[in-house]
Image 1: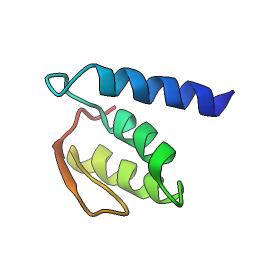
Image 2: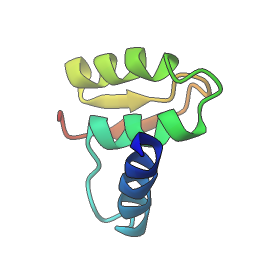
Image 3: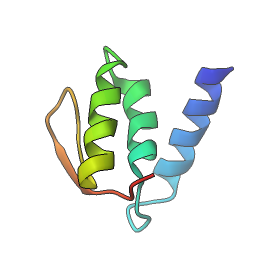
Length: 69
């Protein structure tokens, strides 16, 4: 059930398009779905909450500004 909720949230975020600002939590939800090791997403989320800038934990891709929530 938890996986379905996270998957639904990620689908809504992706469907909202690039014009919508994403939050650190939105990026974490997507990360958990895609990551080989979802625990890596926790560190990326914590850095995002401190800096407001999300960097993918496995890819190292800088996704830019994110809302801190």
